[in-house]
Length: 231
Ligand SMILES: Cc1cc2nc3c(=O)[nH]c(=O)nc-3n(C[C@H](O)[C@H](O)[C@H](O)COP(=O)(O)O)c2cc1C
View (cartoon, rainbow, N blue to C red):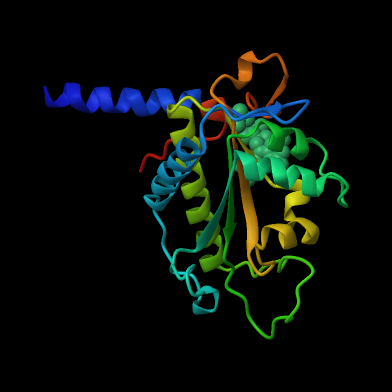
């Protein structure tokens, strides 16, 4: 009986993990959201709860603590509902660098969750940044800040997948840059790791272009990247 329970739980996690795939939904005009605003907010909140359950090793530096955003987690998340995604697309229409396909995805999304991570920095920092602190210091803490943020992001993608919402982890493109950061009020002292697009459940049936992940099937042969160690 116990084995059966473990097996069922495993199967359900396995199914979600295997179902998750990149779906870049390219709407050709702004879509009316399928969820009402309350449901969008509920979805965002549930996905954030999953992110908060991810493992993390090191607290973020004190310098990142603000009045409300005062968590010691090594990342921050910024959320946009569908209406705000459409407004952002409008703002970015003529921005430099061009937002390109990000616009089509902002037209389609039910929600966008932007994750940044909070690098440990050393020495004097510029008071007015025009770009993220790149390259960042390659130490163990920063590596683990990124790892923790990635774990949180993966929880969000798996949650969205499990709830039936096609999704996509984007590096952000134009959303990383100063112009968009000013619109979004996301400080350039934080480093963007993932802009997570959550699309309507029926997005894949609407007849618009949906691009898969280029590397979906690359390098997956277990023996080509894993090795059993026997001593
Ligand atoms: C850190 C990270 C950043 C990514 N950024 C982009 C991106 O900017 N553009 C893109 O097309 N795909 C991006 N992807 C998605 C990958 O292309 C995709 O995961 C890969 O092709 C495998 O496909 P799958 O997600 O369907 O398994 C990113 C994935 C990760 C993990």
